[in-house]
Amino acid sequence: MSSSLAKAGSSGSDVDAPNASIDEKRRKRMISNRESARRSRMKRQKHLGGLVSEKSILERKIYEDNEKYVAIWQSHFALESQNKILRDEKKKLAENLKNLQQILSGYEVPESDQDIEVSDRFLNPWQVSSPVKPITASRMFKF
Image (cartoon, rainbow, N blue to C red):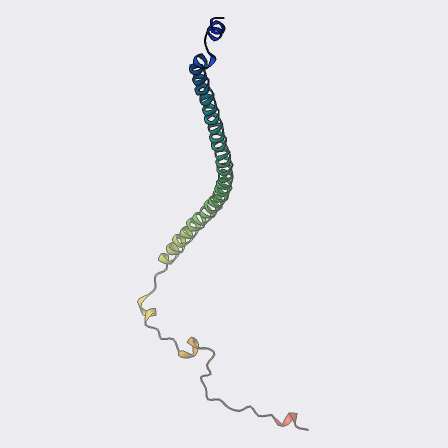
C-alpha cells in the first residue's frame, strides 16, 4: 500500500526508476540463469551419451575378450592333453629302451666274431657277382 501512496504522491518516473532497474536486473539474471541451466542440461546430456556409448564399447570388448579367453582355454586344454599323452609315450619308450639295453647287456659278443669279414655279395644282394651272360633259348622251344 505504501508503494501505491508513493506513486500517487509523486511523479511515477522518479519512483519507478529504481524498481525498473531492479526488475531489469532480475529479468537479465533470470534469463542468464535459464541459459546457464540449459547449457548445463545439454552438457550433462552430452556427457551421459558419451558414457552410454563408452559402456556399449566396453561391453562389446568384454564379450570379445571372453570369446578369446574361451578359445585360448580350449587350446590350452587340448595342448595339456596332448602333452600328457606324449609324456606317457615317452615313459613307455624309455621303459622299452631300458628293457632292450638289459637284453643286450645279457649278450656278450666274443672277440673272435668281431673279426669276421662279410662278403660284399651279402652286403649288396642286388648286385650280380658273376659276369652277365645272355640268356639263349634251348632247342626244346624251337618249332
